Image (cartoon, rainbow, N blue to C red; front, side, top):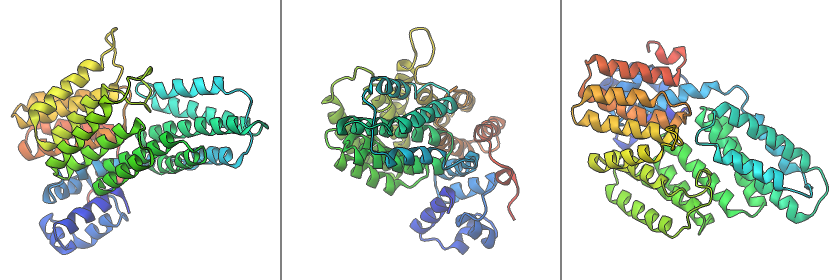
Length: 400
């Protein structure tokens, strides 16, 4: 079943609606709707919008529809997994690790800005090198350290694969990363593998699964910095489930944990706690909670912190979501032109996480459609969103 179909069924069942009742409310042919819900047919854009409105999904279903379409890009889902299987099958390692460890660290620090295809390709190149090195006889300590390098590389490649819409590859790579972490007895890697699981579930609208993965990750990696990110994912899920009190409690818990952590030497490493990220986490939660004042405040802080001294953007993905947050706030304030102009700029980011971008953009699109359904600017935003997700012909077609 597709992420879209799973989310439709979950929302329909939460509201006590039969498939017949939903088909009547949309309206849509019941047989076609059944095929969409079971993933046998993709939804058209028009159907996705109508279902989102009828089920009160606030853009979730719009984002899920585009995310499903983007997942068709992955033509070699087992490529990274095969490299990781070679690593796990070996029982030897090289005598020196410094060069490999330094390379892995630099790649993890390039996640936020480097071209995703290039980063994935280089990550896989290092996985091949790692597989080769693991066939050299050496001691157990060096072998374990190589497994740790493999775990971090797998996590990085899994993140990039998911950014590119390669959903099947990303999940396979995530599982392999967790297995490498378990074999190396490294709680940080295991915790981040659960964080990826929470992130995947969040962008697919599986909010209870986000909370479950976040809680599991916190249990298996106590005291690790990944706990802050796990708590943030839990807060995002609770915001989307309408648990506003839970959002506040969760954010407070994360803030306490973050304040107890030392500032990292390399805050640009994607797999360490970056204190500046907390503005980003709070921005997302407060936007969904409807607190536009706090959402706007944190969004502007994300934009301020993301600018390098030379004027370039050090955190283009975070900044894109901050602009979409400002677009949502402007839409709610009756400023349509500003909302669309700001939102469209977010789509121009050189480095994008497609699932996260589509999730937030779907929320903005739903807000615009609800408030300004017949305005030209609303249609322009929808066109820009379609261009970002590059959906296939089926998504653009007519349902029966």
